Each structure stands twice: as C-alpha cells, then as structure tokens.
Length: 259
Image (cartoon, rainbow, N blue to C red; front, top):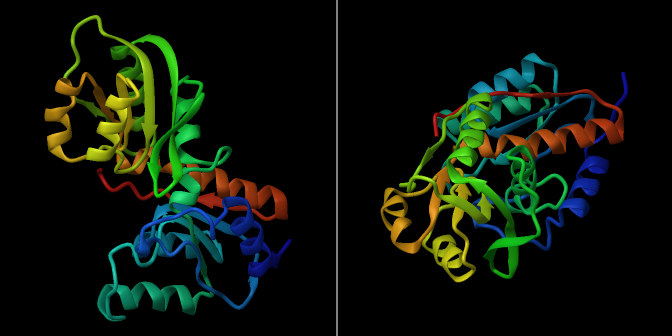
C-alpha cells in the first residue's frame, strides 16, 4: 500500500490553496485541524464534518478527511456531547482532518465556483464576490434562455444530493451576464455587486428569503442551486488531486443536508 505523510500533503495543499493568504471567517480555521500519527494511506472527502461522515470515512479505511466546512464551523464550544464524540472517533481511528473553505472556493482549478460554471456549460471570464480584497466567485457572459440555465442547475443539484429553486423569472428572459458564488452566496453584498456590474443572473447555493424578494427589483434572477450540492465539487477535485499526486486511493463521502 502506498503511503505518504500528513505533513507532506498539508504543505502541498497549504501552498497550492494559499491558505495563509486568502482571508476567511474565523471559524473556518483552514488547513490541518486535527493531526494523526503522521501517515496517510487513503483520503476521504466530504462537504461537512459530522458523525455520519466520520463513521463512513472509517468504514472506507481513510485516515485523512478533507472537508469544506470544518470541525469548528458551529463556533467555539466545549468538548462534550456530539463534539466530543466526533473527536473521539477521529482520534481513536487515527483520522486527520484538513479543511479548506474560501481558499478552495476561490481556487482557479479546484474551486467550487469555477467547477460549477463548467458543470453548467458556462465559461468564466472574470472574478466576482469580493471578500476582504480577495475574489471568491466567478462571472462571465453568455446568450441563453434563463429557464434553460435553471434546468441545467436543477439537473446538477438533483445528481449532487440537492434541489434548485429560483427567484421570479419573466417569460422569454435571456441571461447575458452571469455570476456564481457557491454556498451561502446570496447576500446584500453580492446583490449589490451584481447590480453594479450589470449581472442579470446570479447563481448561488442558498440565501435568505429576502434576496428572492429584492432580486426582481434589482433586475437580477437568483438561481439557488443548493448549498450542499454546489460545494461537493471542490472537495472532490481536491481529494482526487491528492490521490493522483501522492498515489493513494480516495473516496467521496455523501452526506446531503437538504439545503
């Protein structure tokens, strides 16, 4: 069986994803969140970390779990109850955890945004969704009926453990300028940026109800393609890259959330 060290993999991923450079929310805590005894023989990837994900990771024999939303996504909490059980399972089975949030979203090759654009048949030509000086999402131009783009988004979401919804769409509407910000991508900031940049269609994972109320008045259609579904792509691509580079097997652990 081929193995490599956790330190070697982490050093490679940290540099490639620019973990130290891309700003993120404090709870993201990107990089190695939990070490193991130092050797990695199989990689698993999942969007979120949960007991069912950890148990499945152990079942497939992986001892490195790569996630998008890490161990501390819910904030500072005492190590007891469900939080303790997750850590106990990880440590008893020597499973390391590596998390990459906005650095993965923003990556030009393995990022959720650029990969979702490709899945929807769109070619990106620039960045979108600025956060503290870094561009997280992508944008581009096309000439397509918005309802056709919605159909593509629904087909994608269905095959990736989710479902897609939209704000109001006028009959016969065309999408000419689009932008993507996966996950919780519909916000006051992204809607305002869309209006400034004359984006007519914004594709996200999810957003507050009020964004669907405000979108028509801003001249924007929002396609909500599912928080979970839109963020399955990056961790899968990243785990596949690790597997190919270091000649170790990998698995994707499905755990849809319903959002």
